[in-house]
Length: 99
Image 1 (cartoon, helix red, strand yellow):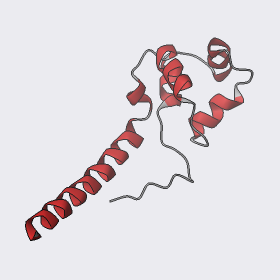
Image 2 (cartoon, one colour; image 1 turned 30 degrees about the vertical axis):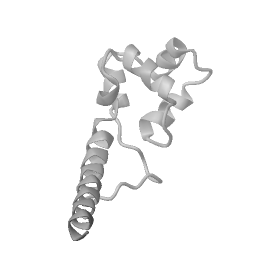
Image 3 (cartoon, one colour; image 1 turned 90 degrees about the vertical axis):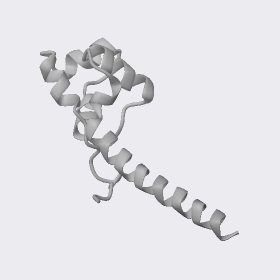
Image 4 (cartoon, one colour; image 1 turned 180 degrees about the vertical axis):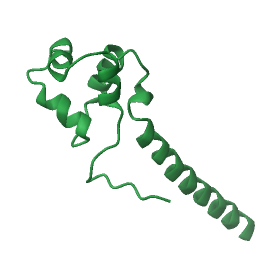
């Protein structure tokens, strides 16, 4: 299993969806009411995450669902959490059976 390194870039599809809409970063920033397009660049590079409100705004601007913007991150999180959940439930069942 691949460890998720949150200190490196955060995988996302923001650039792909922006390009598909034919928008540049400056236009997206303007549509979203942001002061600068540099934050769009930072989000696309995975340097930082947009707020939850801005993630929803991006999904609306890009005409897609929120999870589609971060699908690779979502898949990694699902894999990791499902495995942890399974361990916890197995350990809980073992502890219950030992009583």
